[in-house]
Image (cartoon, helix red, strand yellow):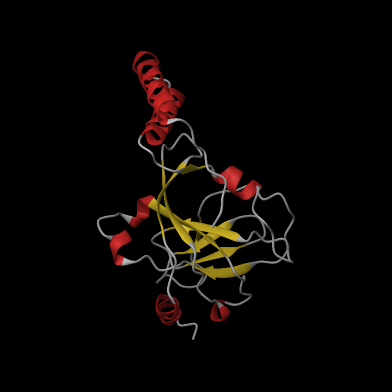
Length: 191
C-alpha cells in the first residue's frame, strides 16, 4: 500500500519535540503536547500518517467509494454507508454498528458496501490491545452483501499518536497469504 506519510529529519524532530514538551509543561496546552508526541515519534524513526491526507489522495472505485477502508482492529467487518465507515460489533448482529473514524470523503457515493478486516498475524497481534489500534487496508472490491465479502491482503496496523491530532503511527504492515485469506473467509462465514 502506498499512502502519503508525514516525515522529517529525526534530529530536527528531536529538537522540536523538546521545544513543544517544554512549552506544554509551561502552558498545559494540549496542542503542544500532541505536537511533542508527534515529533518524538518522528525522532524515534516511526512512520506517521494523517487519515485526512490519506483519504484526500485515495482513489475511488466506479461507485465513488474509497479504495481504502479503516476500522478499529478488534472488529471483523466494515460497512461504507456512502459517507463514513461503520464497523460490525460482532455477536450483536448485522445491525449492530458503531461509527469508526469520521473521514471527509471528497466524492459523493450513494452506493454502500461491505469489506472484511484483514487477519492480524500472531507475531503482530501479540501483546497489543486491539481496541487501541486500527487497521487501514486497500479494498480490492466492496461487496454488496456480507456473504460476498472477500478478504483483502495489504493492511497497516495503526495507533493514534495523540487524541488531539489526526496523526497515526504505522505500527506494522503485512501481506496476507492465500491461506490467511481463506481462513478469514471461513471466520466470516462467507465461503
